[in-house]
Image (tube, rainbow, N blue to C red; front, side, top):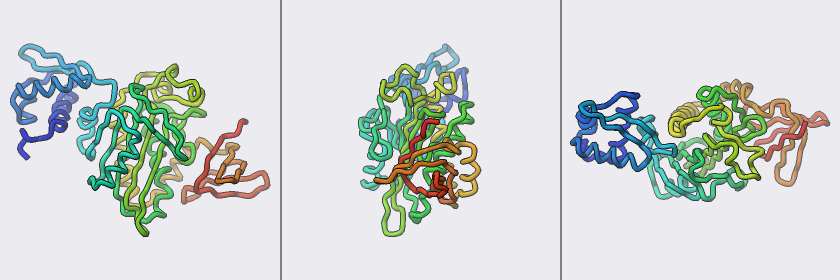
Amino acid sequence: MPRSARPAAEIEAALLREFLAAGEGCVSGAALAKVVGLSRVAVWAHLHRLETEGFAFEALHSRGYRLTARPAGPSPALIRALVPAAPPLLFLDSVDSTNDEAGRQLTAGRAAPFIVLAAAQTRGRGRFGRVWHSPAGAGNLYLSFAFRPGLPPERMHLFTLWMGLNLCELLATTTGTAPQLKWPNDLHFGERKVGGMLTEARIDADTIRELVFGLGLNVATPAAAWPRDIAPRATSLACQAGRPLDLNTTAAALIERVLAAYSHFIVRPPRDEIADLWKRHDLLAGRQITVVQGNDTHTGTTRGIDDEGALLLRTAAGRTLRFRAGEVTLRKE
């Protein structure tokens, strides 16, 4: 494809990449035009369109342009610039659920992998159909990754745990905080939840045909912004880090980590790695909990997970129970 026929999103990501490389310095109009194979007038038109998304550029005589502001909300152009090797990114201002949209796109035959990112969800959900608070303008991430893995179903028992532990590692590194994983799919800081994961698969015979991994992550929401009913148990990365966090830089790092973790998982089951990471990030370690599974309720002390990712619970009667699924509640100590 000739450079001039490149999609606008690709051109704008390439332009932003030049500005990111320059830092606080300037990039000449001629250099920008050469990178994307367009006239300087066409480059200016793309910069003007980026300004409608929240970017700001300063034009300096005889020096070129300087990037002076980035959008606070999700920017697909900036994410593409930060992660050039990312798969196609479908961005929506609002959607019922990024997982549902990813599923619809897969059903329609869209090539995988791809990512669905939304500024808001009207019916964001977690496990058991619970509502995930997903307003626009809150500084949070709502995104789903779509794959066609072709793996046997038994391989998937470890998938969500593996992804969650990788996200804990990433967040610990990038924010200097100590996130934990509440089995099987919630990201926490102590009693407060910062994110949730939802994995959904479609299985044909003995093969996972389609896989959607969804994530809601509270990045920048201030403590005072939470609805009253969830304020006591919610938090954001910025609150925990004690400093502002850039939403798009966080999204880019997260996308890179999820894609790397998925590639690793496809090659071989990461049982040993999960066992090591679990020791660092297990919110439930040695805690008194209640597990609800269907109509049955069990209480006891957690004893970690087994090599298939099942939760181990030691009851007061001395029995060790094993759960592949269930709703976990921490008991007051």
